Image 1: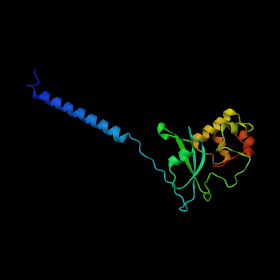
Image 2 (image 1 turned 120 degrees about the vertical axis):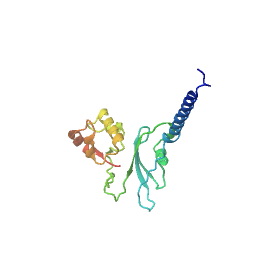
Image 3 (image 1 turned 30 degrees about the horizontal axis):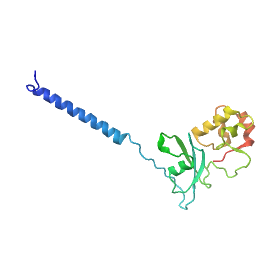
Image 4 (image 1 turned 180 degrees about the horizontal axis):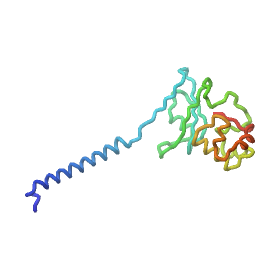
Length: 180
């Protein structure tokens, strides 16, 4: 049987080519428009007096801490200050918390910052290990918990860390503080 003598086969060929073109078009559209990353904009409501904003940043490959930036700062500015040189090298997992103003009662920064105590929101595992009753394993658990859940709001939040109980907390309570 020849293609010349069968119009039915020509229709099947045309239909097959049309379906192939449709599938290719959908694939190109999906790759070009649907799977492309979209920019994220973070807007922080703050007074219009030009006062700086404090941002707590933590995550893998970042110098964890609170960074004070102007109201016109971008996320790239904050990440650069936190030690991320080239965020385009691969996926970056970070946690950003905008710290409230001093008038805000929900602010995690207490008014009385006590010198001489270890700040559990910025201490390294080695610094935490220096506390009585805290060894390297518990110190690392505190840092890991903080990286995953953000800064501690109160000293009592340490009870949420695996391996830290009420007895351990009471042992170190007078040696620690929560700032930021």
